[in-house]
Image (cartoon, rainbow, N blue to C red; front, side, top):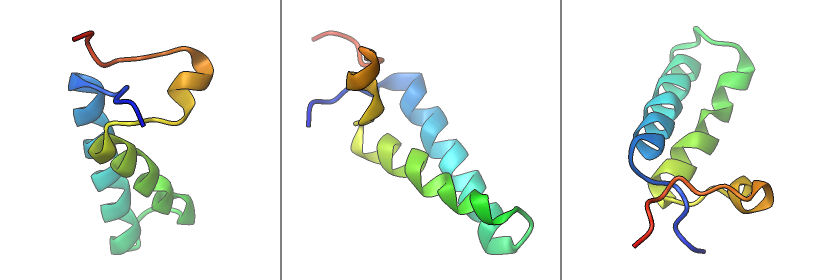
Length: 62
C-alpha cells in the first residue's frame, strides 16, 4: 500500500471518524455513525483504497 493520504486530509479523516464513533457510542447518532471507522482507519493508515481508483493523491510528492 502506497501512502496516498496526507496532511490536512489525514487530520480531517481522523477527526470525522472520532466524532462519528463518539456519537455512535453515546447513542446520539443513527446506526450509520458506526461508519466513522472507515475515515478513522484510512486516516491512521494513510491509505484510501478509493483514491487510486479515482486517480487522486493528497500526499505531497517526495
